[in-house]
Structure formats: structure tokens, C-alpha cells
Length: 166
Image (cartoon, rainbow, N blue to C red; front, side):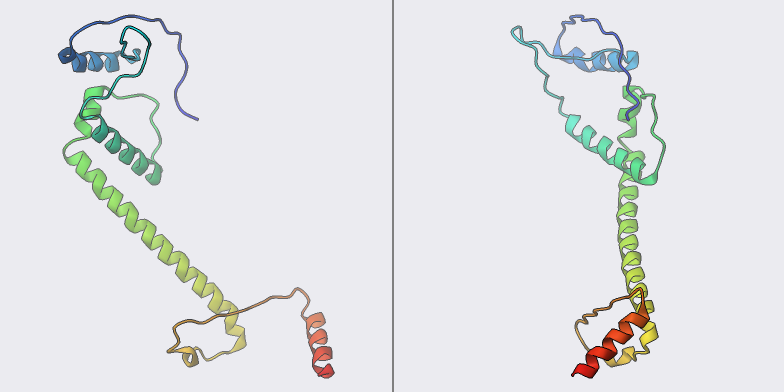
């Protein structure tokens, strides 16, 4: 569940030039209370993002993904827009890229560990058979069909009866 809550809203109309849009958006972020919708005079529609929006959105998604992977607690308070923009550039952004690479390596290592665990489990199940595994060297693949029974005595008697028939 998100940390967002509903609030009573009122409608206002703000008109101005495009060069004042960025400072107005910054003020709206500091107030934490305004949702902008461009108005063309006929119907209401969402506006188009400024040129930095795609890069910022991608960086934010990457950072959120890193926080999620690292198990970091989510913050319910939103930082000021200028704090977010300054964090998206410089060393913090480079650190995020480094974290992403570390998380990829961690996923690869976990996958390798899972594969080794599966192999160890299989070998542990094969160990009572007393097989000499060096005899299997040189093959590209090995298919193992292994089964387990709950009542070994019943299984053995069924096998003995079956072998006497042939």
C-alpha cells in the first residue's frame, strides 16, 4: 500500500509564460499541494513533460529499484524538487549505477549458488548408491532418474515378485 493519502482539493487557474513554468513547478513541489493540468481552452488534458523529464524519470525508477532490492524503508515524506534534481546528478547518480551493477552481480552469484545447491542435493541423494563418479567423466550430459518410496519393504517385495516372473 502506498504512503499517499487523499485530501480535499480546490481548483485554481494559473496563467503565465513558459519560461516561468520551471520556477512555478518548483514552488508547487515545495507547497506539496498542487497538481498541474495544461488547459487548451476546450478540454482538459495532461501536458507534455519538459526535456529533462525522461532522464529524470528513468533515474528515479532506477533508484527506487535499488532501494527495493536493498530492502531500504520507503519514505512517506517527499523531498523538495530541487533536492531530487540535485540528487539525480553527480556522484549520487554514479553511485546508483554502481549499486545497479553490484545488484546484477549479486543476482548472478545467487543463481550460481542455487545451481550448486541443486547439484549438491542431487549428489547427496546419489551418495548411498556408492557410484564412482569418475566413471562419468567425459560425457557432455548425464540424465538421472531417481525415485523415492515411502515403504521400502513393499517396494522390494514387489520387485522380487516381478523379477521371479521373468
